[in-house]
Each structure stands twice: as C-alpha cells, then as structure tokens.
Image (cartoon, rainbow over all chains, first blue to last red; front, side, top):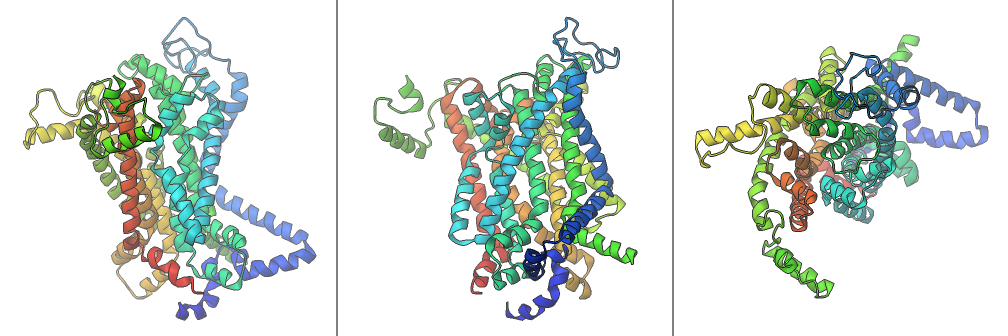
Length: 339
Length: 281
C-alpha cells in the first residue's frame, strides 16, 4: 500500500465526494470548532443540505409517483377507514364491479364489499410491514457493518450467529411457528415473518463493507485515530445507505409477500381482514376458474402489487439521493449553473 | 406404534433418544410418514430432484437476464432506456411469484388450456431418456419456472445496476478508459466482475431459500416436490415428514453458504487478502 499513500491526500476530496463533510479531516476540525461556536450556521447548513436532497429527490418522477401512490395508501389506511363503511356480510354475493355505487368493486362470495374489505384491511397490513421492516433492517445493518469493519473475532462471532440464523430455513420456520403460536397481532406477525430475513442483509452489507473498508478515506480516518464509532457512522454507513434502504424495502416487500402468501394458503389464523385472506376466500371459491368471479381475487392482488411497486419505485428515486456519487454530480452541476 | 414411525423410544432419557435419532439420521433413516405410510427419506429422495430442477433452471435463467440487464442499465444510467427498462423491472419485481403463478394458471391453463395446471408429468408417460418424456417434463415445469423468472429477474437487475453505478465511479475505470480499452472489455472485465460480488453472496443464500420458497409455488401448481410434501406434512401434522423436510432444506442452505464462502476470494480478491495485509498499519 506504500505507493498509494502519497496520492491519497490528493484523491480524497474527489473520491469521498459526498460533500466535504465526509472528508474525515474536515469533520474532525468542524467538530472542534463547533463546540465553541455551535453556530446557527451549522443548522442552516443542515437545512440547506436537506433542501438540496429534497430537490434532487423530487426532481425524479419516480419519487413523485411513488410518494403520491404511498400517500394514497396512507389516506386509505387513515381517512379511508373512517369514510368507507365496514364491509358486512350481505346476502347478495358476486355483484359485478362498477355496477352500483354502494359496492364500487363488487362483492365477493360472502357478499362483502370488495372495496370496503380492501380499505379496512389496510391499517393492520401497514403495521405488520413496518414492524417487520424496522426489525429486520436495523438488526441486519448493525450486525453487517460492525462485523464487516471489525473483522477478527467479532466478525467470526457475529457471522457464526448470522449463519446459524440463516441456515434455519425461513419460510418453513415461519409456517411451523405460526402453526404453533397462531399470532394475530400485526406487530407480532410482522416480526415473526421477518424473523430471520435480517441475516441475508447482514451478509450482503458485510460483503460490501469488506471492500469499502479498504478504501483510502476509511483508511485515512483509521490512520488519524478517529474512533471506530465515528468511522462506522460517518464513513461507512453513508456508503452503505443504498444497500440499507434497499434492504428495508426488500424486507417490507418480503413481509407483504410472505404474509399475503401465508394468509392465502391459510397457514396464518384468520383474524379480521387482510388482503391475503380476501384472496384466499376468493381462490377457495374458485374465482380463478370463473371469469364472473375473478374481480374478488383480482382487486386484493392489485392492492398488494401497487403497494410493493410504489415502495420499489421510491427506492429507485431515492437511489440518486442516497448514492453519494450521483448526489455529488448534481451538487457540482448546480454550483456551476449557479455561478 | 410411535417407536415404529419415528424410530425413537419415548421411555429412554432425552440424550439417548437424541443419539439414537442422530444414528438413524446418519443411515438416512428419517422415520416413516404417517400420512403416506412410506419412508420419509424415500419421499424426499423422489421429490428433491424435481424441486432442484425447477428452482435451478429458474435461478440460472433469471440470473443471466439480471446480470446482463443490470450492467447494461448502469452503463446507460439516466437515459430514457434506463428509465423504461428499470421501471419495467420494478413492475415485474413487485408482483409476488405466487400471484404471477395464479395469473399464468388463469391465462394459460384454465382459459386456453395450453399448459397443464399440475403434476410433473402426464399420466401414463414412460420415464426414460426419450424426447417425448423430456418435452413432457418441460411442458409441466414451464409455468412454475416462468413465474419465478418473470418476478425474480427485476430485483437482481436493479441491485446489479446499483452496484455497477457505484463501481462506475471508481478511479480505476477512469484509468481503464484513459488506457483506451474497448468499452466491451471495460463492461465485462471491470464493471460486471466488481459489481457481481454482493449479488453472488445473495444468490448462494437464495439457492437455499428457494427450496423453502418452493413450498408456496409447488402448492399453487400442485407440483409434487419438496415444498409440496412439506406443506402436506404441516397441514396433516405429519411430524416425521415435517422434520425431514426441515432437515433437507437446512442442509441445502448450509451447503450453499459454504460454497459461497469458499469461492468468495475467487471473485473478489480484495475480500480474501486485503484485510490482513492492511492490519499492519
């Protein structure tokens, strides 16, 4: 590594490029001066940065579309639940969609309004997704980053733990566990479904950390004696953000997919409404084979697909913000055009 | 009767039972299924190749598509074609494979009758190395494979794209361009190779998970593989069959992860040697 040592100093501003703040020496000095000044200038800087990020994000049509779609879903889960009457069992089954205003998407085999059922299933779905996503992502990212950076014994220990968690087959485990515990609370279902999906993310993030930790700016921080926690949070985590965010959406998507699948197959106990339950009821009554009943199966499916579509589109849009290289490119372009 | 089925003696102490169980495992004796009244190992030995066949083919096809597509998209980052194709990939990726399976069944099996809606071969066809048999097998496997490929390639392609963009910003690519290397060479040797590593890890893991994922798929297509029998075992509380399925899937994951670990350095030399030599600082 000797020959690169000289060049690292010149390379740093360009290769860390997520802004000067990520340049370890700058942040080091900044910290010291901030302690005396504590400036409103610092706050202003953060706000400015945030504004820039927001502008970059919003300039991408994918972010716009996904935020609008997610906003509609949020409305559905909050206001929609209050406006749309709760679906009741109604004697007339299989009303076709778009025929009466009372049942915009028709009714299913039980005579429930399909639209009402989809709306009222939303809140518990969201809670489940959020619980699972937060649970798996936080554990996976922490373990992956720490173990990838620390190497040595810590790495071995954590990775053994991860491997053990990973070698337990996920879906069969979930199926068996849900058969034993019969969880009904959405938070429990969410955590149960993502119970070992953090392991895959931890592995993936670790493998990326292994290569990032060898980059010149990390090495420089280490060389200068910046403490480990700061290196992890300031140097490595920003580099990992795309993976972490993608991991979050991946897990959320996985929670949606698995939970709907398990309700669909009838493994998880039915309690209240869920898009998977609706699909199960429709599929069991033969909606897949009968065109006149297909709407009862189709609309819950569309609800699932649109939600996961919006989430992935959001990550796609945020990719530009989160990826420091692209952000830096935008920043410099903006500066140039401003001058 | 319990002794006969799961080959343990309930009146012995736990550790003796455990050792007995392990000894019988080593001789591939997983007990006898209540539901099918057959030896569990025989059931899975018959089912495993079919699951591996479906999942393996699906994995290879989707992998080839996603790596090529991801590298291509990264190279054209920000262009119209990138937007169009990544939107398409996202849309395909946001459909769960079992829902894709239901759609495919509705369209191709129920409505037009082009493909069968279940089983691995037609009734009464002779197993053997005949073209007829081969085509029949493919015909039955087509829909399950298609439903996995169509929904799986998008996510990996996007991951590949993300990694490749990260790699594209590296200095050595500038050097490669300055050296005047052909863009095809840069694309395959420099970008693809370095961007593949994270995907490689996740794929080795997914090989194991795919066996688990086959539960839902095989249930929907009524395709008698490992997942099909595992699901049967749970719905009928057939414990020997359940335990056997668990073991087989677990072993698959262990083998996959081990292979990933051992071949890691081949793909990315930095990961295998880099760490130690820098520790000296």
